[in-house]
Length: 406
View: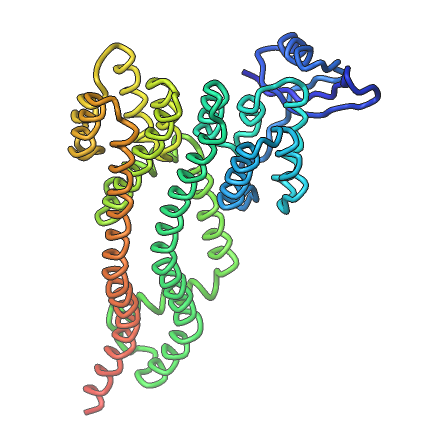
């Protein structure tokens, strides 16, 4: 599928032109799709890809999407027409990106496109889970109920995301302070102490290996700072950019699943997200195979995505999901397979998995609190060790010189 950008004239409103983007196999398919929306194409071009290298792209925040979803559900429940509801929410949206997105959604709906299909044109704002649940709600005529479920599911996912970020912020701040302190000591303190030691011991004084190493590092930083700091910046940028590529992302996700302490939280977050997302989709009436494909992409870890995608292929061949999940104990705990088995027997998979999601979300809270209690002393020991190493490199030669004086 190729993404095309188009400018078209509305057949219903004379003189009104509409701009947008659409995915299709060819230009002929674009013309046909626009014709179904009563639009006469003026210009059709292959859309230029937006820069994906920017590390600080702004978008729609999860909280904004949750509020929009809840408000849209309430307005539809009250009997307000869909276009009027979205128009009203669009006019009150503060985020310009979200405002423009909703404007394009309204234009598509007015052109005869279903809400789910209109939302699918904006994957940066509306996820696969969101789009598929909306489509299921439209098909079953329960869009307001589905939107309520979506809001709850988004709030839970956002809550877990915030907790994980909160747990990571403290060690990152300490690490940043440690790095700044190290550079400060090596650039401003060590050279001064080195001069004092050389003045006391003379140019031929034999210094301990640790002191020589510290002085050499300090000298390199001072003399080649114009190479060192740009190289460090380029290295960090290259690493972050590589992690955003498919190959880099896959390697990074494999690595964090093997790191002690961190892997426990990552696995519990993934299981909670799988249970809640899959439950929401199944409860909305989406097929099992489609639910698994969407859930695989929603977890946010390529290792889990690959495992669940393979599971969906086996489910399509007639195997029960509970049995497949049980065969992968490294990624999925045994309780998940057992609960899935109960859900398959009773026909209440969505209800059972909601309980699993609640349980593992509580487990994530406990695990994060436990890691926070461990990280603080570990970081203090790390910072103390760094300062102690520098102090030892200073005190050893002074102690040696004092013995020679005696």
